[in-house]
Image 1 (cartoon, one colour):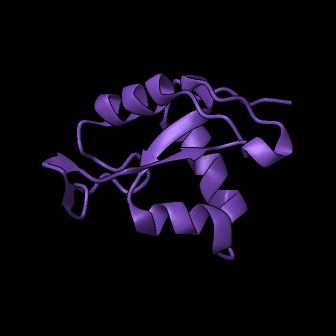
Image 2 (cartoon, one colour; image 1 turned 90 degrees about the horizontal axis):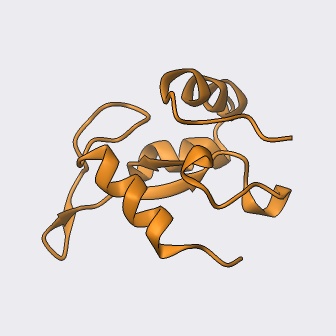
Length: 90
């Protein structure tokens, strides 16, 4: 999938080093910057867009939670409610 580096950069910069899932500081730094992963709330594989309204900056634990946990659906709904720029996509 093609990802716009400007979208990733904006989402990370907007998070200011704080995970948008758990509100904790990034767990470590990479190249002198807080390490957060950009997650597409509606997955690109499910025809989600590569826009800031569909992406959040997450720590590795919250990112894995979105993909692998038993409460991934509930956690995704929580992200939509918590992060006001997110928009549900059909």
